[in-house]
Each structure stands twice: as C-alpha cells, then as structure tokens.
Image (cartoon, rainbow, N blue to C red; front, side, top):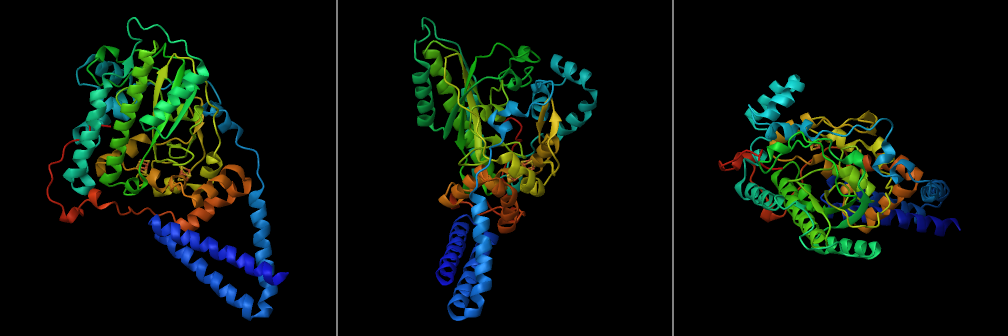
Length: 478
Ligand code: SF4
Ligand code: SF4
C-alpha cells in the first residue's frame, strides 16, 4: 500500500510543479518559473529515493500523508462572507454620507476655473486646499503624457485618440425617451435577457443589474465636461431606479507593463469601449420609451465600484478596484441607468476581503505608498480600505500614466487559465485557503514589481534611447 501511495503522491507533486512551471513561463513570472522548476527537480529526486532507497519510504509516507490531510482540509468549504453577499451596503456601519464629486482631486484641479463662481465657492469653504491645488495645476495635475517613456509618440497618440472617443460620445450620455415613443411593455425577465445580451454583444465581458442605491450617487455635481458650469454644485437626484452595470476586460499583457505607456493605452482604449457600450445601451432605452443615462468617463452620477458589487460583478479590494471573478482587477466598470423594469442580480463573495487582509501585495508594491497596510477604516459611514488619492495621482503625474501597478500585481488579475480558476475556487470557498494562500502566493510570486515585456507593436524605447517626442499635458483626459 505504501509504495503505490508514495508513487501517486509524488506524481501529483511533480504535476503541480510542471503546471506552475509551464503557466509561469507563459505569464512571464520568473520567480514562480524557478520555483516550479525546483518543485519538479525535488519530485524527481524523491521519486528516485522512493524507488531505490527503501528506508526513505516511511518518512516520506508521513510527509505525503500530512500533505494529503492538508489537501483534504483545503477542500472543506466554509460559509461565504455575509457582508460581501449583501453587496457594498454590507459594509455600512453608521450614518451614510454621500460623496460630493467636487472634492475629488481630479475634479477640483481640472474643473475649477480661477475667478469663477465655483472656484470662489469651493475654496471659500475649503481654504486649505487652494494653495496645494494651485501648485498641482502649475505642474500639470497628471504631468506630461507618457513621461516615463519619454512621451513615446505612437503610444501617447493612442491614449489621445481613445479619449477623444469619450469626448465625442459624452455629449450623448443622457438620453430621455424619444418623442412619441411610449414605454415599451416588455416583461422584465425578457428585458433583462435582452439588455444583458446586447451589452455582451457590444463587448462587455460581464453585465449585472441592481437597483440604484442612493448611497452611491454623488451628493453634488463637481465635474464639468461640456461647459455646463451652471450644473456645478447642484444636488444629484431623481436618477432612474435601475443600473445596468458592466465590465470590460483589460488585456493582461498590456496591463503588466505598468506603469509604462502600454498600460495607460489599455485604460484609454477600455474607457472608449465603455463609453461606446454605455451610450448605445442608453440610446436603446430611449428608443424603448425609457430614460437611459450612460455612466462613463464623461458623465459620472454614481460611484461605480460599489455599484458593480451590488450588481454581482465582484468585490472591492484593498487597492479600491473592483475584483471580478475571471479577470480580477483588470477591468473597467461602466453603467447605464434606466427606469425600464429589470430583474436585479445578487451580490457575490469571492473571498476578497479575507484574502486582502493577509495579502497586502498591492500596498507593499505601491510606489507612492497610497494603499494602506492597515485595517479597514470607517469613511462616510462605510468600512473600507482608504486609498490616499492625492499621493496616488501625484505619482501618476511623475510617470505621466495612470500607473496601474496595484492592478497588475494583484493575484486575482492573473489569467483565467484552469490553474488559476482552480486556485480562485478554493479561495472563494475554503476558509483554510483564504488563510494560507496569500502567504503561498507571496512566496511563489514574490512582492516586488517589475514591468513585463509587451507585444512588439506596443513596445517603447528605453528612456535613455528615446527621441525627444513632443509631449502634451495629460490633464484634459482621464
Ligand atoms: S494585491 Fe492582494 S491585498 Fe491588494 S487587492 Fe489584490 S488581493 Fe487584495
Ligand atoms: S495606481 Fe500606482 S500609485 Fe496609485 S495606488 Fe495603485 S500602485 Fe499606488
């Protein structure tokens, strides 16, 4: 009995090493490739010992036996996180205070024109922010586009071109029902099926639906894109009842170049994709006799990560990004709000909160130390990991991209291969896996960030070898 048990156990160990080795080469994970290789060598050495050194069999039987018991413990499912299963509202712990959009460092630095009514109103109420914001504006809030790659023109031009799509479409974000178009009498189940399939057909990877919780609506309008300054400071209210929330996947190979220009190209392209999909959905609702409000980078009425959690698209991680089932943090979120009756989805738990408590990889690798290594804190009545947006954006200005290192290094952002699907399943269901896998992940993959190679068509010159490309300020975009 002992001999076949040892042979089978060792073959399993060898197989695990081989899978890790193969997947890690493909993923450009050097440390994990070496560890996979080492596992295979150890497994082969153990195989030799099992076959040719009989006295080694008993101790190896004990080791493999303990490993098998450990494996069984990993397979025991436990209860899922009850807070996550309630959606983002599961993290409410006190009086909920809605966020005023005008406080975002982005919004106030690019939207408040010196000498204007809104400038005076904002800085009279918040005098301590005036001087630091002036300094930021002088340097350029987001610096020179693509600065880290000397503004490499082909990639910077892709960013400009993609964000221009958002500008073109942004004017059509709000669609009222078209004249002489009565509300279509559509069964909500059928309407839900149509709208989800339309979203996917247009390029969304996942589409979820939720009722719009007021907590995620900005308290006041702060961002002005199309000259409608009279809207600044107005309360946002009377929005539609339902939100069709969707995500687009960001190409992993491009994100893994973070913080270099291919990663910001990928962000920009996805913003354009989301603007396109959300606008078509909004226009479809209008043609069906209902309001349709596209939530994309040129029109935000709502905060999207908690809305996506409510719509069953994932959980919010320590870095503040949504973590979606197949793609982790490599997603962009968009929504279209409507009054058309639809069937809401249920929030899901992927084990993110428990995993993030121990992992901390994003916080440890953040170049500006903007992600906390501490516990969740209460912010406007909700428990969350608070991100220091000001220092994060200051780093964006230094490199001239949207950084994205935290998105790239997150273990959930790995490819949706069978190997990672298997691991994700354990993390979502097994309390033992939630407790131990963050440490195993850090051991196998390490915590230090290094940008990976990108496909040749996106590759950028080394800074020292770069020509002096004409660079432009980033600030009109994002
Ligand atoms: S890197 Fe780790 S701590 Fe950060 S969000 Fe991802 S899983 Fe959570
Ligand atoms: S985007 Fe970069 S600077 Fe900002 S929190 Fe993530 S890792 Fe830190």
